[in-house]
Length: 52
Image (cartoon, rainbow, N blue to C red; front, side, top):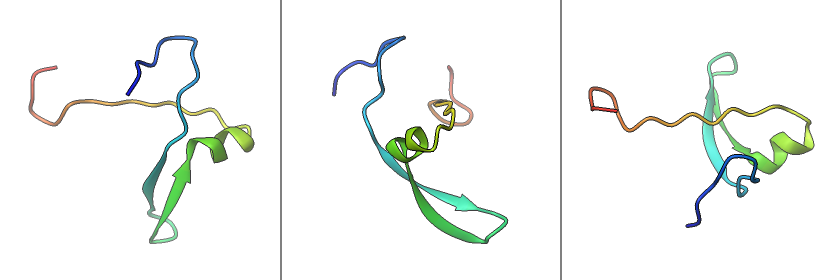
């Protein structure tokens, strides 16, 4: 896996999501977000109760 740096494009990926309003699961792709013109914020953290 290559490094993603500020100002560079993020490689496309997909992830499962849960919609609490529809009470169901779906899949979201980064490419789909871009096509829809939506801003996307990616935020990662190691785990709860661990040192950051």
